[in-house]
Image (cartoon, rainbow, N blue to C red):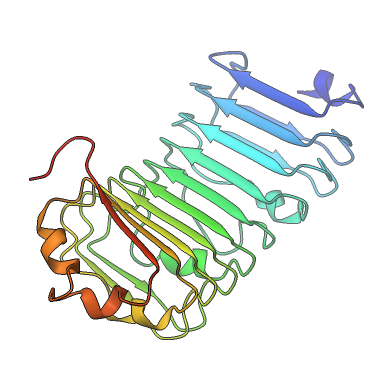
Length: 242
């Protein structure tokens, strides 16, 4: 990495498939002054990442995919205030309150294994506008979106959360949400009552959730009063109607 740091005009880096075989990556102070996009994919030996304060001051997009030995985000990541788009997939990284930059606007997690308690960490990222939780990125049974949480959130997608059964949305949560997609979360029993308080919600899409939801969301269904204020409610099936 020290050699790459000396390329002062670099704006985008992608390291994939054993392009880095070391255990430790250090991004030095004042390194990568023009870097905007950074991607790591399938670095099988990578275990530790150190970011010194002042490194990558213009970075806005970070993707970490299938780097399974990396266990935590570097502490220095929180100093990169320009970072707004984070994507992590198939990872064992532990999420903590202090590790993420507060100005993130977009976060996409796949096979990340968030616990019920860790959802509260995402709530505290006050600038988040777009969240995508896919395929075991949340492993809890119960999810709570608290009053005052996600104040800027506009788009929310859940996909393939196999253990998720219950969702509670407190009044005052996600006041700007306009698009909600729930895809293949087959254990989810019902929509949260608090959804009816989100008057900004314009689009609700169910994908491969089973035909039982057609009845629940129909005019006489149990969940109709929760969604009757939403202009567009769609149920789509690509794999199964069961």
